[in-house]
Image 1 (cartoon, rainbow, N blue to C red):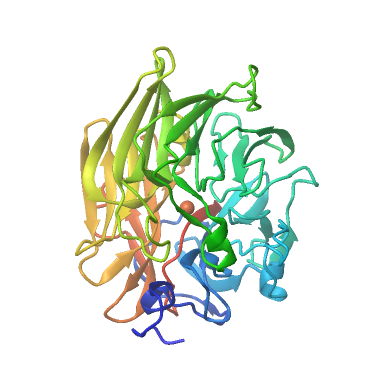
Image 2 (tube, rainbow, N blue to C red):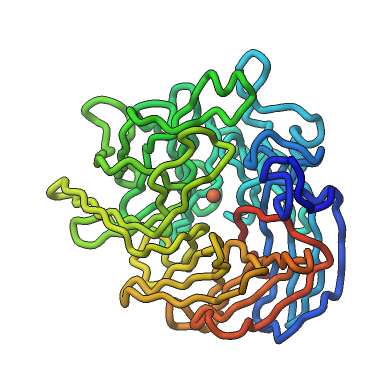
Length: 443
Ligand SMILES: [Fe+2]
């Protein structure tokens, strides 16, 4: 499919258009110098419908774009579909009778590592395991213990190595929480009471708690019958953030450990981080004032960095914007997940701006790497330097797309000062469509 304008919806044209074939390329050209200690693989997932068509941006087959770095060289690039049954058999996770088969999914949203496994994730289904060459291994259901879908945004605790995550559903129980130990064994599952079938894309953890967002985008049966993305904004739903102690109970009744805090209605796909400060839980997010009021086919609003402070002692909530700039895809150092963080990273690619943003949340300052009018960066993934001491000692990895040449490259920025010239740029053999989330898998 050509990446030219047409009557197609936005998610099928320009650089959202899928690339249909799988290719391999070796010995890629590097401009600048790849840090020798960056030996490993950067994998990034995205929606890429193999038929060239899909009803919504979030509905295409998963495709991973991977680059292999070793000893200062870019050894290979390759792209591979995530070959779930929706890809190989063309079946959907929702059957004609409305039943759900969690072993079928498009697994297009994220790719994460835990306990030696590489998992491609989508929030409607079970994980799909891949190998380090990006070939599909198959459905991973934690030895049959997983009884819900799995979010594409699990959180690995940097202290315990545990993987915390949730799954949501349009049928009760609407929300399930799961905890997997550092060895990959699913050791806890809880039902969490929410007000209805809400769409929950991501969540966060703190040192002692997990944080759920019960926000007003809810399942709509009529939209589902029309074959559309079956979620829409609901002015009557309200908005709440729930705090549950790790290892706590989410069940209804007096034993439930989740404390809910009312917040101003909004939508959040992605928190940057959350952490504890005295009696407060601090939650920083990329917050939209609203989302999908008329249709899920358009993303009218932009998100901005925003902070909730929930006081567990007084029950008080305070909220404020931290920056006006439109951002998405917030990330931080893996070592700070759930702990107080000074730095955060995001992209700002709206209007005339195409930049990677670094926030210093202690100093309330930010710097940007300005890519100019034509070059659009994707999610910046922070990789810590091996012997670094500061939180920002390391690099930011991201794919970028150049509209003027219809080509893509892989860019490494110095995370200590991303405003400086890129450390290295690797020319890629093909356009990489705009996608979602990725991970660095060190050797
Ligand atoms: Fe996401």
